[in-house]
Amino acid sequence: MSGPPGTAYSSEDIGFLHLIGRVVAFAIDDNFNLRRAAAVQAELQRQNERLQLSERELQDLINNIPAQVNTFTPDGQLAFVNQQMLDYFGKTLEEIRDWAATDIVHPDDLPTVFANWQRTMKSGNADEMEARLRRADGVYRWFQCRRVPLRDGDGNLVRWYGLRADIEDRKRAEEALVVQNSRLQLLLKLSKEITSNLEFRELLRAISASIREVMDCDAVHISFADPASGKFRLYALDFPEGKGFVKEEMLIESVGACKRALETLQPAIRNTANPQEFPPDLYKLMVGEGLKSQCVIPLVSRGRVVAALSINRSIDDAFLPDEIEFLKEASGQIAIAIENCLAYSEISDLKEKLAQEKLYLEEEIRGDMDFEQIVGNSPALKHVLQLVETVAPSDSTVLLLGETGTGKELIARAIHESRTSAAGLPDSMRLFSGPGIP
Image (cartoon, rainbow, N blue to C red; front, side, top):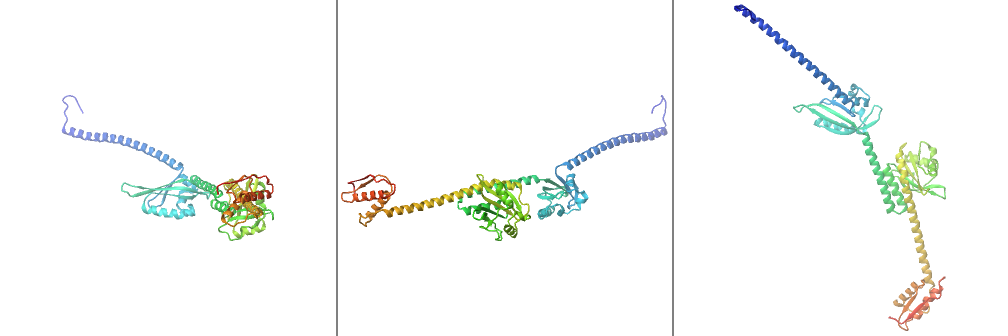
C-alpha cells in the first residue's frame, strides 16, 4: 500500500495490513490450488475415459477372439468368461458357474481332465491338454485347453487365465491322415500278398484279414459262384470273434442288395433290420453272429464279376461313403490278384499234366525199343543203351566211334529201328560209323 509523501503508518495500521495480507495470501493460494485441483480432476477424467475405452476395446477383443477365454480365482472358482464361451455353451456366467465338468466334458475325457486339473491346482504351474467339450446343441468338439497362473511381485498366485481353442478341424484332418495312411498300407500289403502268396485260399484269407483290420470291421469273406447250385460259395473267411455259424464252404443265395451289387457291378449295403434283403438261412446266421450291416462289393475284372467281397459289422449304418469308395477302388486290385492266382494255378496244373504225359510217353517209347541183337549186362553197355534211348527220338545225325569189332553196326541198327518204329519219323536217317578212339 502506498500514500502521498509524509503519510505515516502506525503500528496498528501495519498490524492490520499484515492480517489483511495473510488473508489475501490464503485466498490466492486457494485459488491456485483450486486451479490445480481442477486440472488434476480434468486429467483424471480423461484418464478414466481412456481407461474405459481401453477396457471396452479389450472386452470387445476378448469377446470376439476365436477362442474361449475365462479366469479363475486362486482356489479354482470361475470368475469371468468371454462371449465366445457363453455362445458355445448357450448359458450365462451364473449358469456356467453352477455346472460341473460332467456337464460339458466328453465322458471318455473326464478322467484325464480331472487328473490334469488336480495336478495343476496342486503344483500351481501352467498346463495344456486336449478334450472334447459339448456344444449347446449337444455336439462334442475338440479343444486345446491352456491354463496359465498370474502371480504378484511376491510370487503369490493372484488369478488363473484359461484359453480354449477349437481344434476340431485339425483333429479331423489328423484322423483323415491316419485313415489315409492305413488304407495306403492296406494297398501295399495287398500288393505284397499278391506277389508273394500264390496259394489260392491262403491268399484270399490274407486279403480278408488285411481288410478287416484296416476297415475296423468284424468279419470279411470272399465268395465265388458255384455253377452246380447257382449260388455263391463262401471260400475264404476272416472272423476272429465268430461263433461258428458263418463258415467257409457254405452256400449263399444271391438276393436283395447282393443281387443288385452283382447286376450293377456297384457296392450295395444291407441291414438285418430289413430281413427281406437276406436269404432266410443267411439272415438267421447273421443274427446269431451279432452282425447287423453288410456291404457287398463285386470284384470286377475286364467287365465281369470274378468274386464277391462282403464286409460285415455289428452296428447299424456302419459304412460311410468314403469307406465304400475306397473299397470300390481296392476291389479292382483284389480282382486282379484273384485272376492272377487262378491263372497261375491253371498253368501249374497244365504244366504238371504235361510233365506227367511226357513221362508217360517217354516210358512208352522206351518200352517199344528192342535190343534183342545186343546181349550184355556190363555197366558200360548199359550206359551205351541209355544213350541210344536218348538220341533215338530225335532226328539229329549220330556219329558212332569205336574200334573194329566193338559192335558199332549193332548200335547203328538199334537206333535206326527205334526211329523207324516211331510214328511220323522218316526211315532215311543218316548214321555214320567208323574207327575211332575206344
